[in-house]
Image 1 (cartoon, one colour):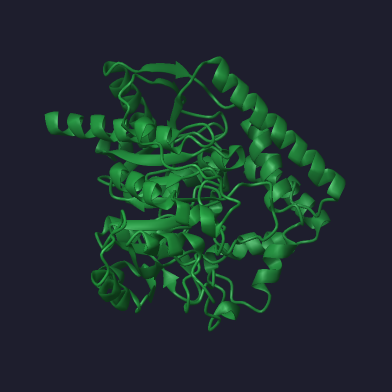
Image 2 (cartoon, helix red, strand yellow):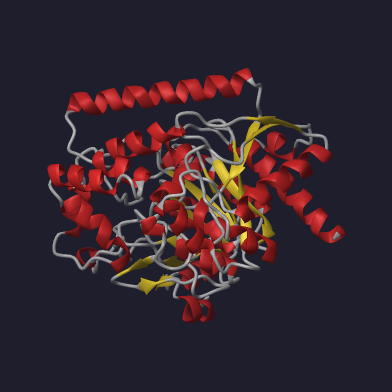
Amino acid sequence: ALKVTADVNCIVDYLAENESQLLHMNSEGEKGLLYGVPVSIKESINCKGYDTTLGFAKHLFQPAAEDAVVVQVLKHQGAIPFVKTNIPQSLLTYDCSNPIFGATVHPLNPTKSPGGSSGGEGALIKSEGSILGIGTDIAGSIRIPSAFCGICGLKTTSNRISKKGIVPCIAGQKGVFVGMGPMARDVDGLALCLKALLCEKMFHLDPTVPPLPFNEQVYTSSAPLRIGYHVTNSYSMPSPSMTRAVLETKELLEINGHVLVPFEPRHMTHFMNYFIPATLFGDGGAALLQFFEGEPVDPKLRFTMMVLKLPYWMRRFLSWIMRPIIPRYSRTMSNIKDRSVKELWKCHTEIEKYIREFTEEWKRLELDVLLCPAIGPAFKNGFASKLPEVCSNTMLYNYLDFPAGVVPVTTVTKEDEEELKSFKGHYNDLGDKLHAKAVKGAVGLPVAVQCVALPWQEELCLRFMKEVEKLTREKSIMI
């Protein structure tokens, strides 16, 4: 791990007491499901005696008084938390840099980003500096770095794993569901970690978590699946390599006896342009701006912070000017404002309706799971903050509170790069042009697909991910 971080800068703290924990474990007779497994921990998760800064200097030298529940349960199961990993400042971007610890770079190409906000985890695990990590996910923060780096990651339903002792980027907001989850080199690693976490110890430490143990029968089932799928969501078109990854995976699944049914999310423009600013920034960005008071701002966040600092009338005027050039971002910008309680309740009611309609369509089609694009391949450093619209395929499942995971299935080819030259996206606007530039120069880098299930069905999601992983590996062996 220390060798890896010297190359990619992914570790922010070494948890020194892991050595004494190992000695203590060796003297005990009982062994947990993760006995002796070293586990890396995202910086925003409290570890007793260590800072949780979110990349803000004001939080330095304020060590946590106790471990987060998830860390306590990991230790109970015999795991050895041994490092904390890097994150972007404030967690609200899918790049990975901050003024305290600097930038983490992609382990396969230093000009590329490892993704975020669990970017340190993605880089460390891909580089074999860790075999298992724990991340958090508010818009794709587990899935994006997993996809960029070529590992597996799972975002659970928001309350399947305890979030007690997790420091949020925007405290108090309830419109977007934050999920916890494991990151590992393969799906079995994710399943073992989830099985270990869903135990009586966690249910005792945090009674607000439903006492649902891991359902092994669902995970190991081999029954054919009825799978919804879509390649695009009519708001943000995936890159050529991502489109190919989804279509090839669909074909593999069909050949192996699964039923694939078209299923495209509806009203994505309203979802991205209204729901996101109305919930994440329902206070006009005041909570986030308070975090940044007296703090140096990471260069990748400067434009975002500039926009949030503008008075509302100026933001509206700037949005109007930008609309012909970058219509999606301009509409989102115009909806960032300090909302009344009445307005927030109206927004939450609309989101509840959206979730209900989405779920009803899923049930009408009798779907088990959903196959769809993730984000990727890895972006060039510094592009993530310029492309919030590309998060639509990951952020959707935070709002729906559906479990979702990613599995690498292919790598970028020269043909993908050639096709990128004519990429126009849905709008052919500045956002689509920046997207093409962001993913350019990625030949050989991994591409992942996203697998989704209904709330509380993590085991089914993992079972689907395992099937995708198995079929992909079998195909690569045959080739």
